Length: 97
Image 1 (tube, one colour):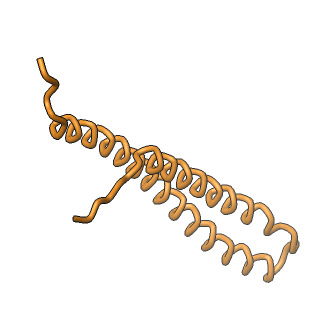
Image 2 (tube, rainbow, N blue to C red; image 1 turned 45 degrees about the vertical axis):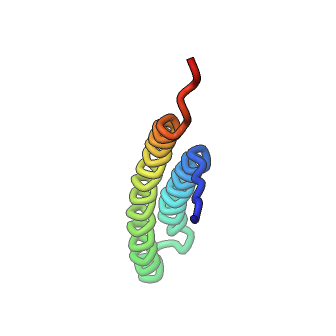
């Protein structure tokens, strides 16, 4: 029989990592938009701002989705730990009296 072990602490740590990635993406989106000024005024700067704006939007969307996923993963890890403890309690033999 196959046995699968899931460490709830690892799942929670994974959720924290996703939150960090989401924050990095959101920071990069803001940082890229702020750096478009370096080309100065004109058509090139406008085109770059348009492209960066698209990337910024996608990074923001991905960041929000990852943040949402991080919350769900963290909740799943906590729920798994609760269920695992309860099932483990059902399977343990009763203590002699």
